[in-house]
Structure formats: C-alpha cells, structure tokens
Image (cartoon, rainbow, N blue to C red; front, side, top):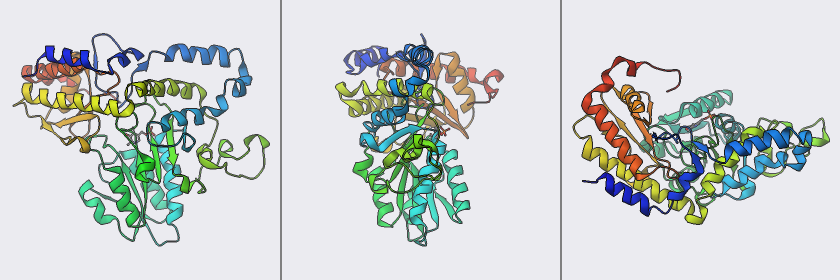
Length: 415
Ligand SMILES: *Cc1c(COP(=O)(O)O)cnc(C)c1O
C-alpha cells in the first residue's frame, strides 16, 4: 500500500517542486480543476497593476507603441508556440477558442471547396462548442458534419471528407488521440486536419509541425493559467498562410493604420487577428504562459508530462487501493499514450453530489454530464500529497454516504 509518507517523499524528489511557488493557491485546498480554470499566477496581480496604472493610467495611448501593446497577440503567441511544436511566427493569441475555430475551419473548408468534398468529420464526444461551430459552418457551405466514435473515424476518412476536426485530449474521458497518426490518415484521404488543443497545450507534448497538422486552436484559461475567459490561440501551418479566414478585421489587415477602404490581409498568421486585442486579458495570459515556460530549464513539457503521468498513475492506484467496492468505474484509458492529464470515473448514481461533497473536504474537481467525475492534475503545482489527500477525501465521502445529503445535489449555473 502506498502511504502518505511515500507521497511526501515523492514530492521531496520532484524536480518540478519549486514551480508551485509561482501560484497563489488557497491554503488547505487541493485543486484538481486546473484543466477547467488554471489558478492565479503569483506574478499576475502586480503585472496587471503595472499595466493598468502605468501603461494605461500614466502612458495612456502611447503604450500601444511604447509598451508594445500592438504586438502582444504575436508576443504571447510566440511563447505559446514553444509548447506546441510551432515556430514563434506561426501563432497568435486572440479571441476565444470558439471564434478561432470558426476562422480556421472556414479556411480549411475553403481548400475543400471545388474538390467535391462535402464532409466535416469529427468525434461524437467532442466538446459541444466545437460541434456547434462545425455544424453551423457545414450548413452554411452546404456540407455535412459527420460524427463517430473515435474507433470509427478512420472509416469516415474517404473521398468525401474535407476536414477532420478533432480535440486532441477529450474533455470528458481524458482520452488522447495520436495526432501524427490521425493527421496522416486525414492526409492520405485528401482531407485536412484541424486540432483543438484545449486540454493539451501546457500539459502534454504537442508537435504540430512534426505531425504535419494543418490548423490548430487552443484555450488560454486551462493549463496555460491565463485567467477566466483568457484569449485563445491559433496556429496555421505555413503551407496554408495564404488562405483567407472570414473574419476580416482591421487588426488582420496588412497595414491597419493606413486606413484603406479595401481589405488586404496581413502576410502570415497576423491575418487571423480581427479586432483590437484585449490588452488586459493578454497581459494576464502572458503571466500564465510564463508559468508554463518556467519549466523549460527543468526539462520543459517533457518533464511536465513525466510528472503528470506520475500524478495520474498515483491517483489511479490510490483509488484502486482505497475506494474499491464503491462503484467507481475508470473511463480514462490506462496506457500513457492514450491519455492526457486528467482521470475520470463514472458511477451509477451520485456523480454530481460526490464532486460537491468533495468540495466541502477541500478537494475541487468537477462533474461533466451525463455522469463523469473529472479530476485534472496540472503538473506545475499539484503535489503527490495532494493526490493522497484527494483520494482520502473521496474515500470518506463514499464510505460515509455523506454525498446523499440533498444539499449536494443542488445544481448551480456553472458545473
Ligand atoms: C474549453 C474548451 C473550449 C472553450 O471554448 P471557448 O470559446 O473558450 O468558450 C473549446 N473547445 C474545447 C475542446 C474545450 O475544452
């Protein structure tokens, strides 16, 4: 049996242990929801105060040039690029994931048009916003969105497939796709591959150029710790840099301050910008991305991945040891190459209430419809002893049946 002492010893040996100090984490809580909203980087309040009081308050409009505001989407994008196997000038940070997906999917579909391809292929369990955006675009282009379970997707990659659109790590199950293999299948069929990295960027190694992917988007407020509603990011392979995206706005113009009547897209990834960037949000996101880049001298994403697997392995093992017989069924695959940085379980009943009861024990995970208990293990700040505490709390909640108290079943607006 693994003991608390053993977990503490693993923490003492953890080469990334010092990175936890980069965050302001509330005392006495175990936060296993960094895959939904990353915690507050310790540097962020002072940095935002500086942006607000100095750059905005004192320097006013001059800061667009003097503080480099105008380049912030590229600067932050360039930092994110290091985490996803992209070149610095291939990524910009802007807008939301949903909006960026609309842009790249539109660009991808513009390639397919005229080739008699009329299908967007995706996974049935994909995140709803991705499916909504794809369905709306399919309808507008007279195409079809075709959904399947992961195993059945290869069979759909045929002469009708225009685009394969996948989320790298499934938000519910934590299952991870082999990006290179799926991209190859799409290309072999003559389709393009669009990837959503919402649950991968900053948590698992991603090599977009290595995989030969075509387009990607990702989320700023999950493992990148950019704060609630942080800007998203968008990557486009260089071979597609001449394609247009439909949200033509002045910030994506080749010369925004020439104020020309006609739109001329900027060369490269800058054309994926649309309106004026949110400087406060991008400044916060930069602090968040910097927390992930702080792992670079310690081995970078590869080291984060090693620790993430150590934490998730430990959680799975401890749940088996301490929570057996309570009806929890693991949904997340066991093989490391098949999973991201979260572990999920189903249970016949009580999933939502169990997650709520855990909050009272200082353990924050989350629940996803219809019946998923989801626990994310962000390797930057999660300790082995946190995993221990979470499993002990879970055992208590299950053994005591405390979750059956009606107050734990009341639903809030956000789950
Ligand atoms: C979190 C998440 C999003 C969020 O999109 P927003 O536009 O930021 O609300 C999109 N797709 C996936 C797969 C996600 O996990």
